[in-house]
Image (cartoon, rainbow, N blue to C red):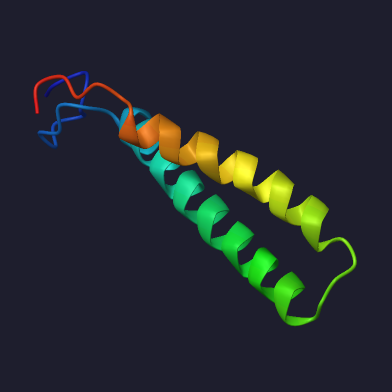
Length: 75
């Protein structure tokens, strides 16, 4: 029996697979939640809409900049 996978034939352990999935899932959740928050603030004419829009645009810009400017190795 393989000591790394426990005999089930998987080359990478569960923790490595989870580490590969957490960053994209977190980016998707963050993006959609910020878009919903900005949409709700715009719908209800919030007095803090400009501050909320500035904060969320910085976060969304950094998330999209990370994923679209990253060099793809081996793809």
